[in-house]
Length: 615
Image 1 (tube, rainbow, N blue to C red):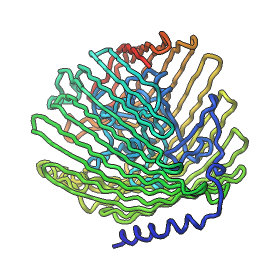
Image 2 (image 1 turned 120 degrees about the horizontal axis):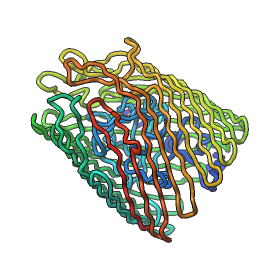
Image 3 (image 1 turned 180 degrees about the vertical axis):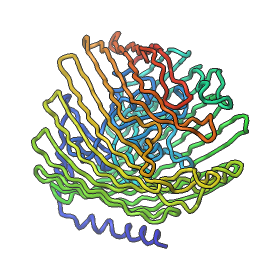
Image 4 (image 1 turned 60 degrees about the vertical axis):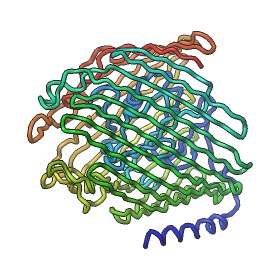
């Protein structure tokens, strides 16, 4: 009943509020700065609207297609591991299950969006990064820190939004390398002033290597190779219906078949998002979007076959209003329905929400207020908010401080999974995980070629969910403390360009004082490039990761072990043979470092990859 009241009141009230707003122009409300190439430095994810990064009161990183091409990266993990505030674990090589931790938060406490569509599984709560092909990616935006006040559940550690390729020249790319790795991708974008269409396809496969080693235990270890084969396709279409209205649709499908030492799995992800954007006036615009995603996972092992399927439908209605030249208002309505299915259960949960964001930038002072009310069918009602203030000490230097709350509703497995031989069952009485975060940071464009960013944060999470109750049932357990410092420095001098990122993190269980597994206390990454000529670019990227704790599941009960610190060095070359033809070379793990991202699981040895491209 409460949900219906919220929906009805919002539908009635929004147009009235918008029409009552004083006249102003949307263009005048935002002071957009340019990067050193004259392009817009925009953050879209942080506040659900285009906004210059310097005026965004959050820690934001935007990675473009050009950045990816310079790296000659073979996997999205190669890109994400270089970013500050991000740590990862992987159960084997490329194609294997991967977990991303933003600022020490759990992997299911990071919201992942693909073309604006939620893609984390409603059953496990986490996104399967192995299913995503890097060749499909045009842009990655990382927002560190809570964003539940705009996006609802899951955005405790932050948000990662991935946009597939929708513009650019037609291209064909072929790659071959170690472990008999073969990749093929192609795509095009075309259109006119009113209609645009883009299609991209990719396929990759590799013989791989054994995912595990002897430390994984006799019941897990199998020294055979574990290959994978992944195919994906994306399609985007948009049409300018009238001078003030635009409609579009984004489709994505990917399938990843991967072997692991106990069997094999077949993971498939399908998403479709449709939208209608309308500018009613120079001060009021709205976007209505509908999305559907289907996450399907089939796993086969000696214990049998399991099949989990997630179906998600979502509706979002967002209104952007310029109340004055200095003040912007966002009002939105959101509804989401998640369904999880397996041979043992078929359950559905839903969530209705209203949200608002008020931003005022007058002179050097920038103020942000965010508020959201969620009505979750199992977690109940939840009010989250965020306050942020920024001050421009000069045209090039800004400091900001923010305080925000967030929550993660229990996923379907945590609520309803019937268990495995009487263990690991869900619990319908679970409370949502909640958090409070305080952050202080600054951004300084020292000069057109040098930029420095820093932030300090503290997050406290309570009601953490774990399968540690009687018979390992899901229960709410301890509190977690996350504290850290992040520094980023990018620069360019003549033909040399670089990026340096430092992350210091304390991630501990509040009750026991134990470090959370697979989170290092420090991580340092370097990305260095040198333009030998207008046609040739050399690259070097390196990552140094401190020691971590992990669990040894070969013992019963599991025991706590150490993962040693490690460093990885990669080299790359990008050379244009002609106007349309290019060649790229990447040598990964140049020093042949023997390291672990998860205890008992192997990682790639030194390997070289050759890429030929036409565009």
